[in-house]
Length: 142
Image 1 (cartoon, rainbow, N blue to C red):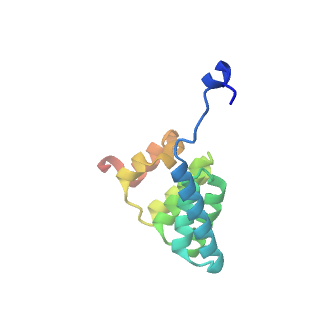
Image 2 (cartoon, rainbow, N blue to C red):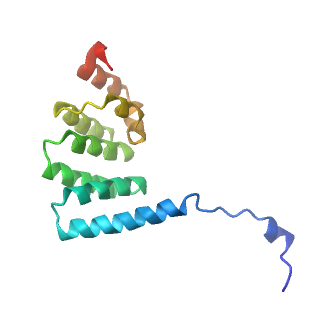
């Protein structure tokens, strides 16, 4: 066996920081997609698919799923909240604020989650966010 050169031995190789999570996400995406294809109105499969796509950084696909969910559940505030998250992840702030306003109109109330959800980071940086919270909760913000 030939000895490894010093240059090759000292070279830094980037490793996948979380291969197990990536494999799980890929499996979950495939499973949920198959369930949704078999029954296009399977809301649980669509919701899980949207979450898995978001975790995997596949935000355009997650947006398409969230749009399907809001079409199937037009009065569900969480569906519109998730839609706002997808728009925010894609830096479509107008779409995110429209969906977030709709979520509030339908009764979305999880104020603490709204303030810490990483998917809404782009929205929270926008000046419209404070105005939206003021309109929804006023000075009584939880």
